[in-house]
Image (tube, rainbow, N blue to C red; front, side):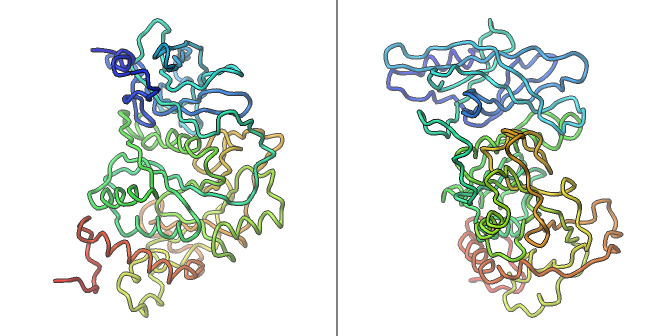
Length: 435
């Protein structure tokens, strides 16, 4: 079997074409399949903060279990019209990504240093031994303009462009109407792009994903991580995906939301995120804020639908989650517990599920705990410990999402009708369809 590097050499020409086999995001092995443990890489990014380096998203055995890990080697690949493909070996540095729960495998950053005047490599391969031939080849994703010096103090606090990152879709996710509601409500509130990771999805959601991809609204990356979820690694390798998304959006988006499909960060007094963040900056001066935490409110699905829904004329509107479920717990979770985040990606270095684990510069930049009077996380779920006892918690009615009612119905209905036949979407009870 030829190595990836050998295969690449054969397909190169002298026209500066990036090799076709280099991946911008897919799981590839570092070690042979018959090795004692798995070692995989997914993506590679140029990082221009604190000097220049290549940051690789990887998964391998948790270093705190048994003996430590072998230091990695980065093979940097360059292409020139004169000599074709050239490579250079540099020693890399492994850093574990937090929240691994001491399971056998964890996500890691591998940092490959670049000298100050060194050109940016087209690709990188990760090796356990510098004498080995590489089994992987990652395209170096470079989102920052070449030749421009990065300066954190030049970043503006206003929302310029916003992305949404969601953990890997799994268990053949196929909640087609909730998926449409998630995408369209976030677009109404100001999201420009969505980055999703496809472990397994059902046929209807898969079809809708392709429609959004064709319009440039969604990026979908394959997520075929060959490690058993929950037994050997946390939830489909969630923290590898979250931090891939952090670096994938860095230098391209001013703000990034990290959420699940049953969650919405809803402003309390503003229509969209741009208005909210403009207000927060005017009130608190957020130029030195790197991330924003939003308190979690459970809108348990076992609570009855809002009575107002029965007055809705459109059958589809009666099915929209944010309009049906308006009863929530009075008590909100503390920041850091169940909370979710909006980050300025250039100023963050490691994302967790509910908090940030590492800043670009923690001495200068800080977090903001957003007050519930300004926005909260609406989390629509069943009782977290099974049964129905959760509905005994003191509750209140919160119709904050109703300000989006007309726009949300129009957006979801248009999508549902446009793709109903081709995606074989489920019929909405009470709706009329062409015979």
